[in-house]
Image (tube, rainbow, N blue to C red; front, side, top):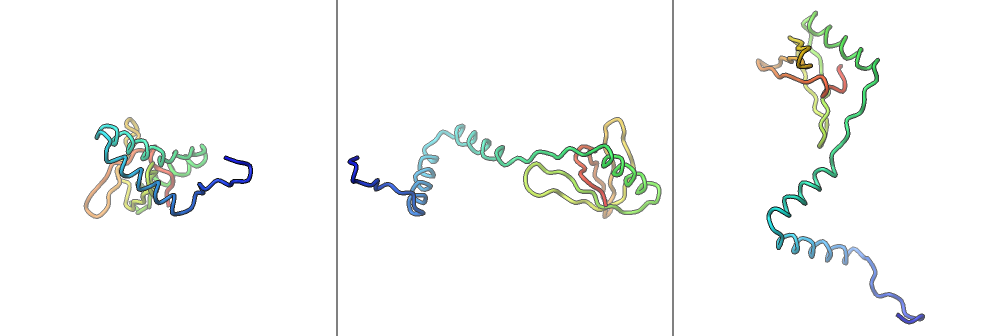
Length: 123
């Protein structure tokens, strides 16, 4: 390119659109295994890391779970999800399984076993 010339290649929204179309066309020509690997990689890039709870927070959560069993009262448990929004479950804790580190949460004539490691908070 000469000193007086400017580059005619500028990244505009049109170029990004063209590039995305080319990428989509190229992905259609891939082997299914490669496409699956790319999808898996994209999904893993969106994975969240679980926040580490302080010892005091863990003690408070344990106390609230125990109170739910003793008073047969409902609580709402916030559960960590690596992809997307965290889940919230409301019910009554009916059992602790200390060996498997999980609780049994009863709600609407159903129940669910929830691992301690998934719990971020209780209210």
